[in-house]
Length: 108
Length: 233
Image (cartoon, rainbow over all chains, first blue to last red; front, top):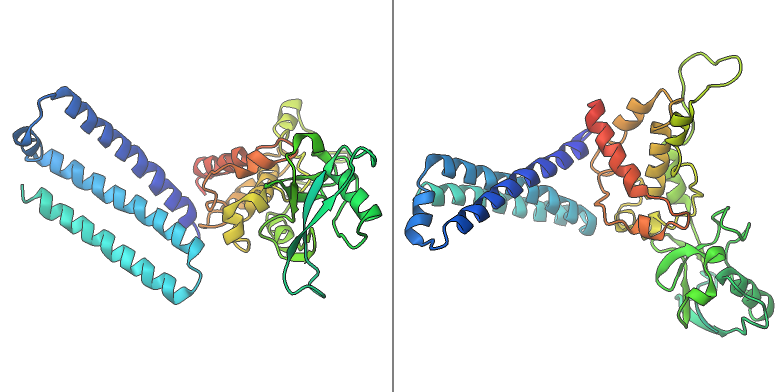
């Protein structure tokens, strides 16, 4: 709790930079392939490096979302038990999204 | 000119209500909102309650919400406002009566940041000197009059007035962190690294928008965050 404000703030900044770079990279890729079809898109995600970078992107997105959601929930949900339950549901959903991403990426 | 003013006397009113007053501002020679409030109190309704003192934007007593924006009644021109002029107390603080709010929570946060010079070095014979450059770092910080317009326009302060220091307190926190004569900057920074004190600021800039002295608390808050990284607290 002591330094966690600074830590969370850093997580959000660092994750935001990585997500921006990744998103820009994807936009450049799409612009560089004007006749992009299912085959090329599918092929892009068969590279191990792309799978790892995409998983990292999703992981950082989920961290970013967790800090943001935790902040909003502490602002607006005051009863402790209700807040705890909502936070647990959000956390479980985010962890679920992470494993779903692994299944999707390594299913290609 | 029509004024719609928030009224609430907890001793006699079941609930707050808005009361309308039609005031001839020319006849009463009113230029500022405070002039009109004084004219209403003197001539129409002596029960109307508000704080005021210096009537020139120095004491910070008459911060209130005028036409939806927090400002000082004494420095707000009537000619710049649309009718009816809606006057409410500063939002988010408990009401004592009419336009008077209980500022305890605001002062508690101010007290938390230790708003005084701390120096562990031996006291010099005359005074602690500062170069003009070091002194200039305090410009835009020391001018705060603690009117609470900024903190009470900040949603983070509304939701967490007990944990979030608020823009006014943080501006003063940075005022002492930036002071070359203060030796406790690192301790000051390390006392603010929890998720609420500073980091509840999400940079929406309501504080910058309302400050009647034209100060920029957000800039000070961002300096605090940067210094935390640089100092590795």
